[in-house]
Length: 90
Image 1 (cartoon, one colour):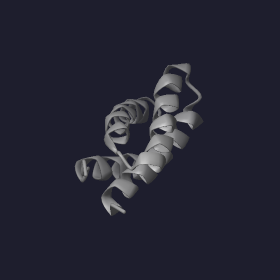
Image 2 (cartoon, one colour):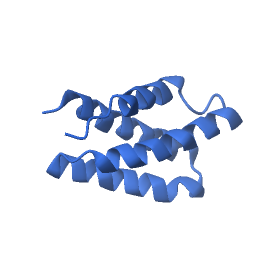
Image 3 (cartoon, one colour):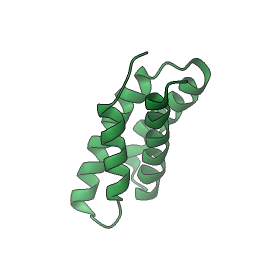
Image 4 (cartoon, rainbow, N blue to C red):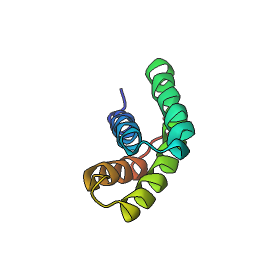
């Protein structure tokens, strides 16, 4: 088990929750794809989808934080940033 990729999975799960709490239709597609990637990673341990959609969700969360600072946790953003920067393809 690759601990770095497991942290990426956990960060992506937290991002899904954060995006769902915002209750914006514009996030629906990214949330559903990220959920699919989380499930896929659990099955095949290939983290490339987590990385791709983790980056997309990170940019959405950063933009949402600028508009609504209290609705997006700084911890979620920092965790996702750290996980993405430590991403390991193996």
